[in-house]
Length: 240
Image (cartoon, rainbow, N blue to C red; front, side, top):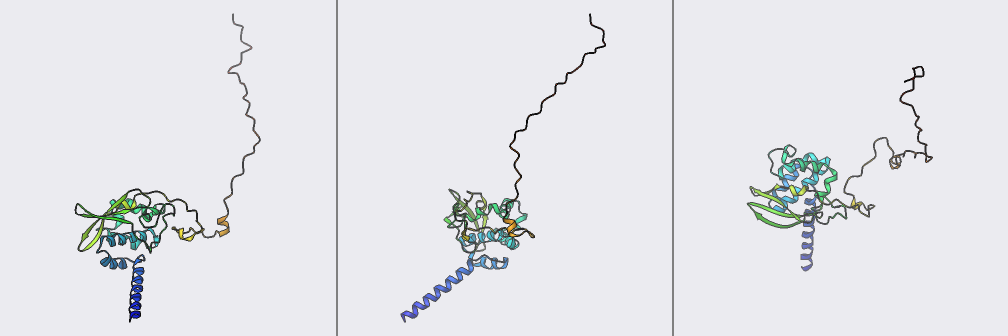
């Protein structure tokens, strides 16, 4: 009987882990995101986690169209995200790969030293405190690239939490440092750029030709020729 109880508990734990792993992966469609939101959005922590998942979906051009609708939903906007002037900087930095590390910095385990490496399909937001302020609920989050915490503001609508102010999430933080173990694929956070069509890999790896150096023999400076401003008129009568 005891062994049976242990087996049942193990099976339940394994099942629970499987469900958790499945829900941790980034949603592929807006319909999937919205369905999850009806459950996970009942807590402010769950709403912020889904908001971050939508951001990571937006960073990928292949899922950007669906992610735009996810972010519109999680921000409780009445029009598309790209049409909102208040979020123009947010959109600009999500589209710029040079700024993507800023969003990754709010995930546990990241740092400038490891290039803010993390898995979008398995991450936790670094939430350090929850508090009420002026009718809003604020989640203080920590960026591994900043010294102080930042507050994300949320509001509740009909039993679900939505992000009302996410400005700190796209504040620029310390730039990542080049990892010393760049050979390790775990540190690859951006897609590898492939050579253009018609260019072989060997050609792509060859350095571009450099201009030949100038000869080291000194070149003499040009000699200026003296030209008088005017010549005397030899036929003119002598001056008295």
